[in-house]
Length: 294
Length: 92
Ligand SMILES: Cc1ncc(C[n+]2csc(CCOP(=O)(O)OP(=O)(O)O)c2C)c(N)n1
Ligand code: SF4
Ligand code: SF4
Ligand code: SF4
Image (cartoon, rainbow over the protein chains, first blue to last red):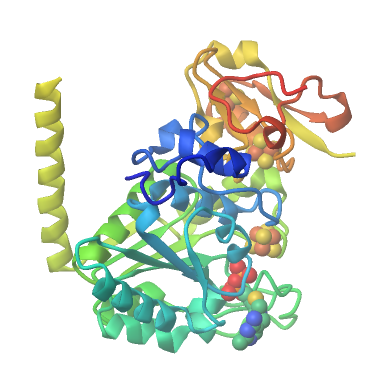
């Protein structure tokens, strides 16, 4: 982490909004923050208009804690609920047309790699299940086949939340939604299986029950994408509006769904596994060395 | 009228918990005063979802958070007025 890219020129700080000053003084740019430190530092995500108690909001909040290099990351999103919050974070955001995210991210990542040879730049696509599994499906699949080195995060609320409740490919079979009155006709798409087939280096399925695990998983996916190849996280982030979940029960629902059909599951390609094992070893060695110095 | 979360600082301060800070869906909303060892809520950011109440009651089992109608909140912390603070300050 480095403050260099966000620190204003001398004399300008006092004219910037309080929120920005707080980011310089107490923000996450000083060093990688942990989930256990939440509440004690200024988070990169600001106020936004997503619904009260939305699990997707919680997940996005944790992404902003987990990203291993906030100031060298570009997030690519699109239409859908998530972008209402993602755009309020202190990380550059590129709005791909609905369906285009993984094509836009491909160009971005390749361009950044040419422009910044000595500074790794992370590109992260974060969008809904409709945006990625339905309308953006071809671009997602082809970015995987081409082994593009960025992370795709699907905010899977199993519905088109932002447009009032149409079923998506990720909705469960039989589900009756406001704008799918006769029920979803087909099985939920197996995007994790497709990712594996397409040669994705790392995949994870996760729910919103364990914040530390969410942060670790995102970090892992971004670091593996940087070095090895495409990574994919499919996160159950319920829509309490379209699924009529009372907000105090949102985490209970996440726990039930996790137990029932959305358990935490990871897959590593051989290359990703050996890269990750090596880098874990290296981190352990560094921690030990740091302890010795202390 | 809407309600916001209020932390009983005496109950919370007797624990070393921090759990609700990890589950609030909103950023910069449940803050944590490391000196007093207690969580506190930026009332201007709380959306009243009550997720933190469930976390404190059922997961942490400390029963330190109650929902309070906004007009009954006394000396609520307003992050938009004073900005991020490492310790709880009076924003009045
Ligand atoms: C090309 C195009 N078609 C349709 C839309 C309208 N639209 C906006 S958001 C949305 C649905 C979003 O659903 P999803 O991607 O699942 O995200 P969610 O809102 O559920 O998080 C649609 C269809 C659009 N913006 N662009
Ligand atoms: S409509 Fe659903 S997914 Fe969208 S912000 Fe509201 S609760 Fe979240
Ligand atoms: S969950 Fe309860 S006891 Fe724990 S930090 Fe929050 S308010 Fe305090
Ligand atoms: S009620 Fe919801 S928004 Fe308010 S502090 Fe609790 S978890 Fe956060």
